[in-house]
Image 1 (cartoon, rainbow, N blue to C red):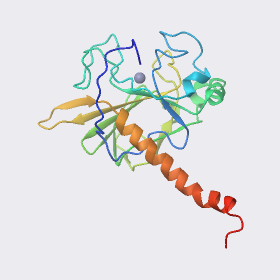
Image 2: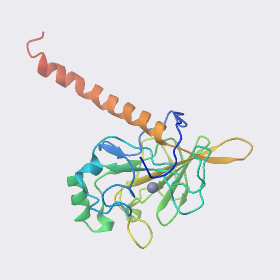
Image 3: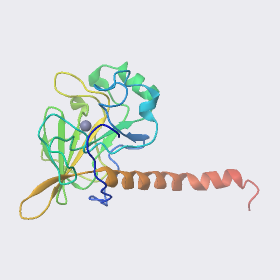
Image 4: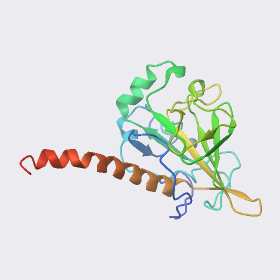
Length: 222
Ligand SMILES: [Zn+2]
């Protein structure tokens, strides 16, 4: 997104086999800070524009803290991507609920692995040479605990806005930390991996609907 940091073009799919971390619901990847309701933009986080295309990769987005990746020229970066789920009406429905009751959008394990850490607003899933980090889930309704083995697609919890004492906007912040060999780990952009996983999820959903649609269109067919 213009004027939000220095990006680089990298179409590497670092995690080619993951499932999309949000189950079923429509998902939008884009900046939390630089869109309506964010710190830099003002406005309302439930603005319909936040739930419209295009997606944006905000992995290299500028932050004040020292964080870096081979993917980004700057050493003060976001280091993850932000995923909104549902639509503006869902955002308003969630806002009407107490924080501990946020339960509209299910978040799942992207791969087979185990829960390696649970913090005050983070959950780490370690799997196949990667650590997948989930931020801002409803931490009062987590479906897993540290040490649990989880299967790809298994529910971890609900999308929310937990962020220590001050809630953030409703979104899932998602990171991939990759083992680069020789005990070196590096954060890589999850964007292309998520785009591919979302395409697979939507194609599978469409395939399930297809027989019904064909029957509807070809009502006279033998
Ligand atoms: Zn984020």
